Image 1: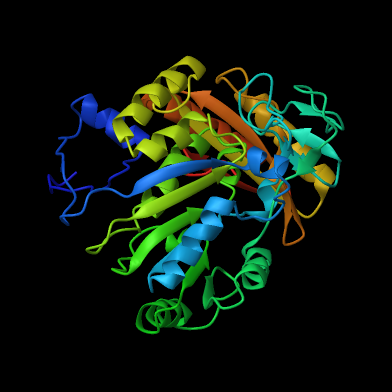
Image 2: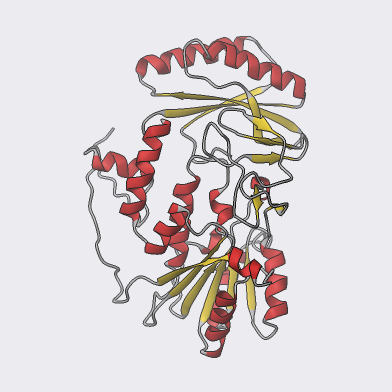
Length: 382
């Protein structure tokens, strides 16, 4: 608006921003080398299905366990990353790695406990959870999810001499807790820092030479079209915490699906390779940047009224836009308020924006006892 230069910097740019840069809407500048003299960390992938076959049922592969132990013996530090969001549970076969996905949208379906149903949060498709794997007919169907607190306890059990710090929402509630944990990790030479996204980027510890990623599958199977993008970004960023000093860095990514493209791209730390494949998928499925996604979220204390309001909003939008049937939000209830949403996929322009505004004005005149929020191209669909 005011012709002020703005510099956006990232080793893993937002896919939409990078697309606009390649289209010439944004000037693209590239840094081809790391600032430090050290190269990128060496990243390897561990297939956790093979670990299970050999009787290892812990969250730690043998390779990861020995890497932490090696670092302790050499007075070097390690970081363990686990990103678990309680509401994003998905169903997976522990024999073949099969994940239940929507037949229409190619995203993992989310389990709703209250209805005992799997639901796609793009088209509203619902189905009962399987008890037998459709791919290999195994009965080892599991509801995937292990939190940082459980991992910390197991780590203390298998490495009783290790000093461990945990950094997540539970341990950083008090004032200055973030700084205190990071300072203690650095100054007291703690062996292992275990944490969620808080440890994934921005930190620079010279003595950290090993990073382990537990359950990388939890980043991918989240019922969000941007899941692969965020997974690649996080895996690449957290691996980059290793080897930032004079010593060579190493990283291990543990997964039940080692052939997943974004995991392979993160192993190679190749953004261009990831982008080229992901942008083709986005175009085929008509996802941003090739369209805009509008989320109309309706909240209220009366579930029947919320559902009715969602249907009214859909009725107003369906003739003017490519709107999808109303469905419960991934988190169906927050603070005693029920949540339903209507999704629209459309390439917005001035005319479409005006029509959308008119529809919202008409909805407000209904004076229903609900709250409506509109989010265009949200960072997260969850």
